[in-house]
Image (cartoon, rainbow, N blue to C red):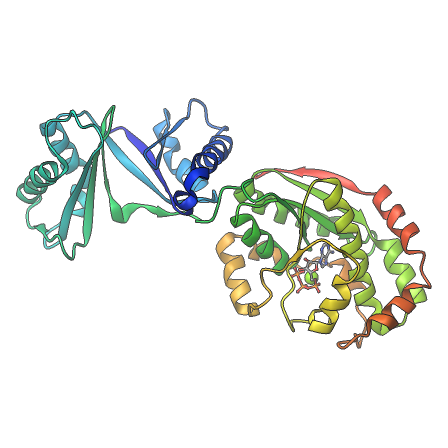
Length: 392
Ligand code: ATP
Ligand code: MG
């Protein structure tokens, strides 16, 4: 039987007058994510998006892609049947019989959006329920507590049949682009990719900045960051990744500032440069993977000192999460295995033995007077390399 993919979406439905704008964005994002397959046809009707794929052997791949697009709540494959009651009955049986073994409790839910179809929803449900009961030896109708819900939708062109339980869960969230743009400080660690995914899920387009300390960090470390950006881009589509040369700044800090302030001063430089890149690229906020108390530079006092150099909002979606919760998410979104590859990050190379956990802003600012902050930032900005990262 020919199959089609039905896409259901969630929160957009609550958007009132703006709903069609959000639907249009989601439709565009779906088309873009599937543009690598020839002849895919996508359309929306009554809060459902339909995806028709001429090459039926690509359906699994299509479902896999769709399940990563923000704004989608569930993805279901459905059998396409000609709109005639007898044909629908036989089609529903053919399509669902493997799920309707002996003792399975089921119900049929029908929906008719083509009002010229000669049976209403209740009649369609009854006819098909009766037929399935007779044909699938031992399956019993139970409308209150079914194991399986067979859905039949009689739409304009065709009828569609599917089992509710066979749908694939989507990401939820809002369509990318509906929430503006933000710049992710992307290290090679576990946390920042998760932070990027969480904010992107709310519809925010992402670009990313990585601070790179050649030759202290290797080409492999850079490839690892590109790989992480590529995994995130499966959810967001293309990510512009800005690689910032950071060695000179780190060496200057090491040579001219107290050792126990090194990490904090370094982080203040990261924020300043990230904000510059964000402004230039039209982003309205920064995103980091910081979480309160995780390391010395993430105490409340340290976060305050880090924040003080910029005026843009900093989104820290992991702020109240435990490491184990972050790891669980990293595994779910597929970044964990790459994050734990052992290549050095610029922070790990220049870590003081006893970093300050209760820094005083005035002291940090005093230490920074030994550095030509503006000059160092200009030099780093001049050396920025931009890489367009796409899903693999
Ligand atoms: P992560 O697992 O994301 O590396 P972390 O627990 O190692 O985080 P830190 O090293 O203190 O924590 O970094 C805190 C945040 O600062 C990171 O989550 C990331 O957003 C940003 N950051 C750290 N190092 C870099 C880097 N080399 N390039 C870009 N951003 C960075
Ligand atoms: Mg790190």
